[in-house]
Image 1 (cartoon, rainbow, N blue to C red):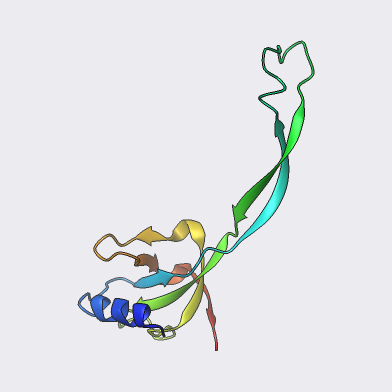
Image 2 (cartoon, rainbow, N blue to C red):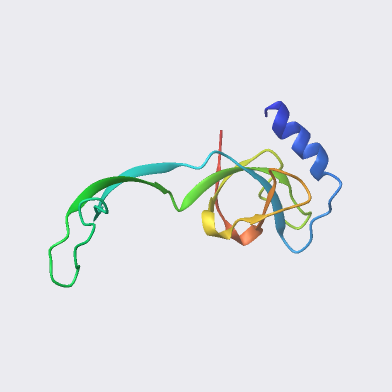
Length: 118
């Protein structure tokens, strides 16, 4: 573990999590680039979209993957298969900010999809 993660683990030891809630440190968001066709505002200025054909241009978009990685910082006693320091996979929309500590988020135990074995 890095120094940053170790300090976050120390800060999270104060909390005793209940009902299967896990404190995690999300790693860098994984994403991919895709292209999409969007209307060209400059070329279509003054045109009526109902009567005239609009010009399109390619735009590169960055899209986040639905599943991301995180490092476990605190685990309640009723969850035995996940330990502090494990790297897990979770669904991005299940993550909740834990506002008491910067850089820490919260998941429920059943929202963990996988544990990455190193």
